[in-house]
Length: 443
Ligand SMILES: *[C@@H]1O[C@H](CO)[C@@H](O)[C@H](O)[C@H]1NC(C)=O
Ligand SMILES: *[C@@H]1O[C@H](CO)[C@@H](O)[C@H](O)[C@H]1NC(C)=O
Ligand SMILES: *[C@@H]1O[C@H](CO)[C@@H](O)[C@H](O)[C@H]1NC(C)=O
Ligand SMILES: *[C@@H]1O[C@H](CO)[C@@H](O)[C@H](O)[C@H]1NC(C)=O
Ligand SMILES: *[C@@H]1O[C@H](CO)[C@@H](O)[C@H](O)[C@H]1NC(C)=O
Ligand SMILES: *[C@@H]1O[C@H](CO)[C@@H](O)[C@H](O)[C@H]1NC(C)=O
Ligand SMILES: *[C@@H]1O[C@H](CO)[C@@H](O)[C@H](O)[C@H]1NC(C)=O
Image (cartoon, rainbow, N blue to C red; front, top):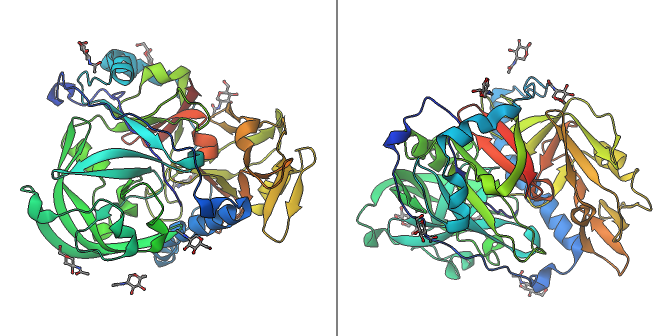
């Protein structure tokens, strides 16, 4: 499991007092440096896919327990996707200055800030800088989990040794709490106790955030560039204090941001592009046309709101509909690929010329020069995944592993885990107040 992410803040909602937000604050620029090399141990595409499958299954197994307790898996498509395409209404009036933020890296007021995010190898994950107390950390931006955690000073795990660690004795704003917490991720686990401190993202400071201080991290984090993870799903997924407020919830409660965040993710092969994460709004310089919203489906896997799960209308290959129905997509910025139930993966790949299924490893092999374009339809709008992103990694000079892996991560034949293969090709908006996910064409 790897995560990548970026925030944008944005106000489309009118009943928030934008005057309460900081004005004329400047956001320090974080320059993005693209990492082009791949971990030497990661050169085998099949191995990477195996790891990613295991990662996704582990990550979501955190919530199986919660789910069995509630015995209430609702997989119906209640979340009717509304065609609320007029969402730019609010953006233009409330945050007219937004578009400056990304280009100039200035915060222009209204509690919005854009921070640039970094892309790990192969768009595996994106992370941004945050300051906890007075200490800097690189944090994965993960809409597929809700915990906020960083390595603690007393962590002796190998993974803690090559990462920044938090020293509470050096922070005057630290408050002890001491509740045990733990979380499983795709490729690892972390655990420790809780603490309370301020978290700064750009110029915005979240006061008294409950954070996880990890004193035990699995080796899976060794090679990752990020120090910790910043979860951006709903509070009920937070394994800290069994549903503690996420950093987003805290920022909203403290009226530091409008209840929305958004991302423009970059591609590792586009060198002059920068990913960005906007808290409190959207960065209008990063998308074209309208944002179309899709309501979050409640009670998916866990009671109430947890995941950013929305209705997927259908998928197409080269514009031919596959006539899927009843599908749910979990939008997870912390997952690299798309992991979808085997039957659905078969339906998609059967429309791609010269595909092969590798039954030993459970991956699809497609020609590296495929021109197939897969698109996902949300809220009546098709969003394309370019052929280049449909291929993940080569296994020979002509054959590549597909970015769509056949696995029912949620144990539900209709639930798709939609990661960066898709998300990096759209401008994505996570509207916390109205509980909906918006997409627009990314510039
Ligand atoms: C990479 O592979 C080598 C040889 O298989 C192994 O010794 C090493 O521990 C691996 N490193 C990581 C970080 O997994
Ligand atoms: C799903 O829709 C049905 C019928 O419209 C409704 O009775 C039910 O409360 C809805 N469930 C959720 C979780 O929204
Ligand atoms: C957008 O603004 C127009 C004019 O102010 C209004 O008629 C329309 O209902 C708004 N749409 C939304 C979704 O708010
Ligand atoms: C921020 O905006 C101000 C005024 O618009 C401008 O003078 C300044 O150069 C900008 N800062 C950056 C880092 O672009
Ligand atoms: C690390 O320190 C915390 C207090 O910050 C403590 O609660 C925890 O038990 C310590 N863990 C280890 C492994 O020493
Ligand atoms: C760290 O976590 C692992 C996996 O849960 C566990 O096996 C190990 O005993 C833990 N180590 C410590 C020092 O608690
Ligand atoms: C959304 O808009 C599209 C195109 O305008 C339309 O075909 C579709 O039926 C609409 N969906 C809903 C749920 O209104």
